[in-house]
Length: 303
View 1 (tube, one colour):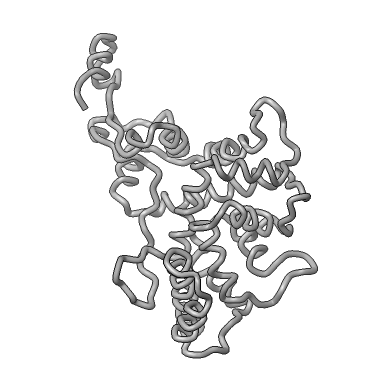
View 2 (tube, rainbow, N blue to C red):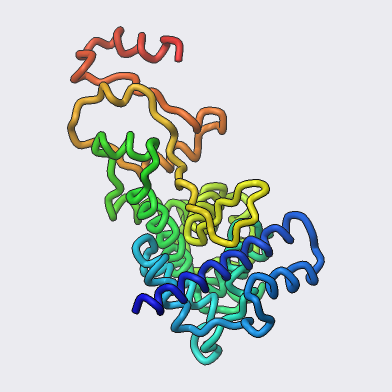
């Protein structure tokens, strides 16, 4: 069993290195020969072009299982191997790398391809996506991000969690629904299907979804590459956070918070960018009493 896990770990390192190379090519060079030569060097052979499905499933279990929503695991399997009659027993190296590149560095069309393929469909401008499937896809991204937050050792995340700010399942689901709700442009009209044109416009304007997806895939792939570092091993994942740093929260009494992490992420994403990095604890009736003038004084005091 140890030997199997070591082989899977070596495979994951090779796959991650291949992904890093493809990302570098996307950012710096467009020559396919660079990618091919790098891939041969990393794998020590030009024959390792495909990975068996059982090996990918071991990667899911060992590296991704504890921090990924089960629905997203199924969507990723659909993207890598196909769905239904088109399902393949193997996946090409490029395909594994594209899953990361399309989500983190991809164009709008490439991100549309990811969504269609994850939902078991081929991308076609004439094919509409069922809104329910799109909503569940968004929920799986949000849920995976929140799982990463819960397991993060980041001081920023811990400062919220230590004061009983949690991410309840119902609020995580609500955040996923909120992310998906704007795809049709009219929040008051129930959605049943969305066209490719609606999806394209939605992906161009939905900043929160792009940020969530980028953080999810950076952490799943363990890619946090430092400039000049050519190590073949994936580096420790970056601490995922769309949470602001918080100042003065240590003075807050220990009682269940009214809002949770899902609310904080949603509110923070809709603030002007310069106000997203740090929040300050302003007022609590338990600490400051019920004086209205004291409360307004806290709001107007220098940051």
